Amino acid sequence: MIDMSKVKVTNIMADGSVCEDLSTYLDTHTLPEHVQRMIMGFIRDGRAIREQKSEVNHV
Image 1 (spheres, rainbow, N blue to C red):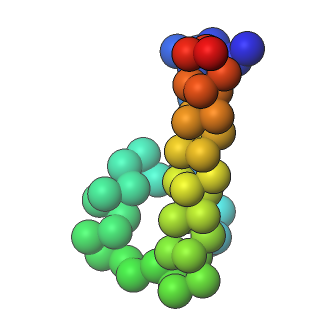
Image 2: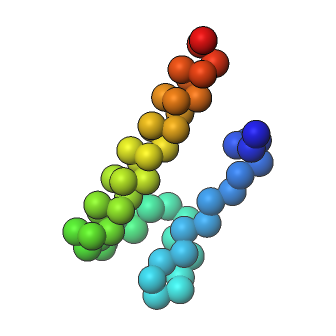
């Protein structure tokens, strides 16, 4: 099991810069449609994994 409290996410943008806060980045940039679809896919996949783990733990 991964200890999520020790996970650090670094947002490296396509131009190689590091973005500390994606909400700030999105104030001045628009993500391409395919990137938005990828992010939504990651969110859906993560939710499905959490739900599966939750079901296993409740059985």
